[in-house]
Length: 474
Image (tube, rainbow, N blue to C red; front, side, top):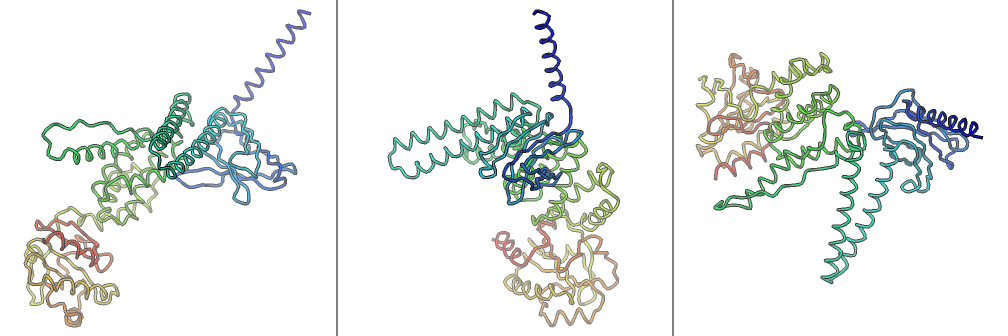
């Protein structure tokens, strides 16, 4: 009897060891059971930099069963299993990827039963918890809107606060339990630092404004404190791209110098991993090219020289590097904030002048145009109308630069468009090389200089000129 018991114990231990070894075996085993979709297809997708990509597909059997498999683990991150008819659910993949899920497509939000990988189950349970908290929070908000009773309002507000505290406590517990693991990576990316209380010295004339500025500076500099941009798992979440977009477009002040420094800081934080470095550098390169913020080509030049033209961006092929180099050469001498190149151009009497000698006392508008350019034909009358108010004001001058070499065409254009009030110049000998110093790749091209001949605006439309003149010439 003892021998049998001992033998049974040995067999039981062997079975448990086999099961443990099976559970520890790498590779994806994602079994799905969707009884009401027998014979249909199921798809596995993954998030990367805010986009969803298809990874795999399987045919479910007649009972709706199937499995996504792989001999090796898939990269950790948030994945999606989806079916026809816009039915889908999220799956968090961690280091353990042996998972089973029972699916009720009639109730995709609550009709899932996960088993297997601990973090996958924990993520689903957390999602369910959040959904319940959101329902309760919405109900409290509706009751708060409906009541006029002050005591009830106070009680409802306190209850709402307790709900938030429950959510924070749950998040903190999961982050601690799964520190360094995918679950914590996912939750950390959703956190932002608490704002400290700043002590304002006595005697400060504007304490509220100073406190607001200090709080904003802290929020800006610590917005991504919990995100490890050198961990590629971060980029396999659905929210990282939108978080970056919100930070750049809503948190940061929409000026080129207010965006460039934080952008470089975030890129530098990603450099420990080449793929992460590529994601961040390319994100801000794309932003610098597509942004409508004046002066963002400064960021393009900064990124180009810092990463792409010196070989640090090892992923960049020769075509991309060549294109960036060409773009930089075109714009690098006429960036917002730089001293305007003081080229010499010829007036209608054949006399050459450095453009500084033709400048307004406070504002100089440098207007490059070609007579055959359709946009130039539309813009020139608008600039002339704008300048009517200031043509006798020495604080503002318009220097109109004809970009071609046909003198008759130039003079005819001046006469036809009645721009005699402008300072009209050209470069008949092509001796100024203005195209090397100023970006004139598109026309019309308008630059605005300040009293010290620094470029403080470029690619400006006439409405922009009106705003500049309004606020600068008070």
